[in-house]
Length: 263
Image (cartoon, one colour):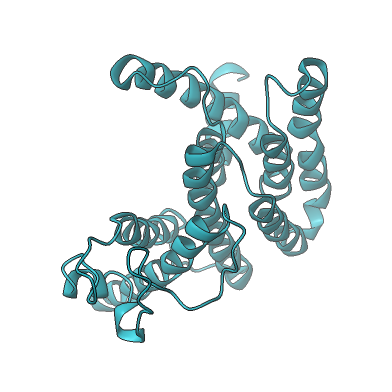
């Protein structure tokens, strides 16, 4: 393939990412309020019903100069940021997975890459929601579990590692939840680790949990020192970071660890 072909492919991947990012914004804004995801979008200030040309990801925000066409109030900067970030995530995931790639299992490999993109979008949605309201929507966990089941179908020879992954970290966290009566861990985090285990398998979900705890400790301590954040932290964003890293680099990290310490 030529350089132009690669550029076109990754541009289309980026476009897919920002369009999914638009849907993610709806989820972020509506799921916490238990609103329907699919309904006509309106200005949050004046209630003006947006037209189709005002809903084009990124482009509409730029053309409208970040303001409502009707009342001229500023549009939440979250919308273009999430769309752009999701587009970059998709490009990054496909690049890390070396797409397009020559492989005997080309279709399976690329379907898995698409699943990873969808999972990354779910991680981003639940991270923003949990950071704001300290709650991980169960619908996001169900979505991740569904992605995990598809992963099992694609990798049916290794189904046991995903099934074990469903229980390993989640059972451990449930014991903590039971002993502390819910004061040390939230039920949403338990469900998240169960769904993540279906997607990543038992080794990588443990790695994701460890990375999430380390990132959560370090980043939240810095936030407490720099921004005077409270002691209570939303663990979902950090667990999501851990799962994202383990999803893309987990096998390489395990190979490195085993090579350094066991050989």
